[in-house]
Image 1 (tube, rainbow, N blue to C red):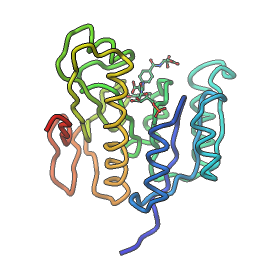
Image 2: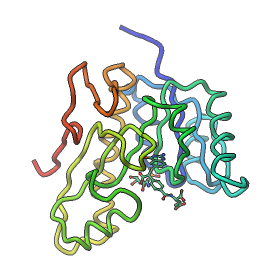
Image 3: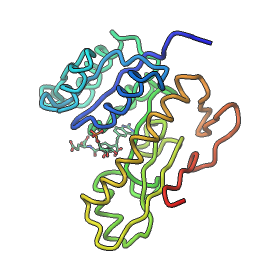
Length: 219
Ligand code: NHR
Ligand code: GAR
């Protein structure tokens, strides 16, 4: 069965390695998506070069050129709307979005957050997991709601925290999992297998566990 690919707009702020995983999936046919555009709030984000190299429209809308969050988000919405996306993907996007933005894309806005939510919402998650001497850490793909990092989880990957881990070694272990679970969640959405009702995520019409589908890299 072939249908038209899901139209995706990806928002980034930095390196764009998660974007690259999606581009690779699109190119090798494992993802039923078409990335229509990549938009960054920083003009120097390396992810914009990745997009250009893949012949995907790449644009910067710099938050620092706007007076407030609202006017930045309105400009972002206008630009995104010109690509008529079915799905908007935050991939290392580092600006908190206003309620207007989140409402506009409700049910079709995903984020990847580097912790086992609801643990460690916000920033500096790897340092916080190390400081707490946690023996596991991980990453969560979730639907975005107005509550920062509080939207319902879709998939979580668990990694071990090893003796002598640093932010660098731990974040690299987590990124390996990111590049597996983000394409997986995006493909579920693209194949219309995912939906969200209130704060309950359904996969193939069945409710997912409250922390989402779990992948344990220690198995
Ligand atoms: N917006 C809403 N409304 N809800 C969420 O769940 C969001 C969101 C925007 C981004 C990603 C998130 C993460 O995965 C995300 C989730 C940035 C900050 C932050 O504090 C916090 C969480 C996330 C992204 N940003 C600072 C700000 O003032 C700027 C920090 C910087 O530029 O480095 O916006 O962690
Ligand atoms: C990823 O590790 C992602 O989990 C994290 O930023 C990195 C982006 O990498 N996201 C956040 O911290 C959101 N606040 P990438 O640009 O190479 O995809």
